[in-house]
Length: 118
Image (tube, rainbow, N blue to C red; front, side, top):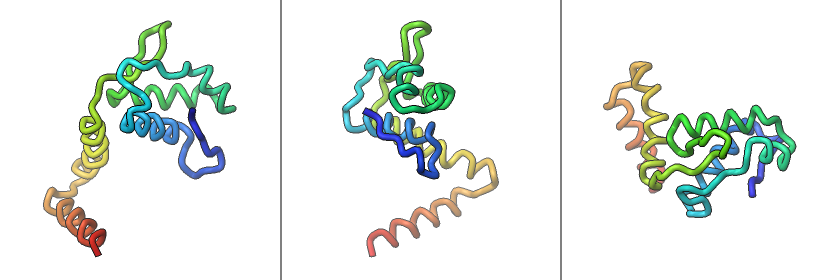
């Protein structure tokens, strides 16, 4: 189910997160679906269980999944829009904390969208 590129510069735990989010967005994974156990995911992909645990912990922290002790990790009930808004918030909050103003951010966004239409 998961295709991880062990040679990629993208950390494996991020690849796992990205794939789970994509599966949620396209409806492959639905709220309440159980994810593979940490041990099973690690064994199937030949990776360290701590890597999988880190990916699941980050996703739980961000509200995409929830953990039932001794039962497993399950997909939380988040809409695609909630998921996207959460991703945007994660990108913008550090910028705000580092002094980037709303006006500066909006100017860059405007510039990017103008480049995309050319």
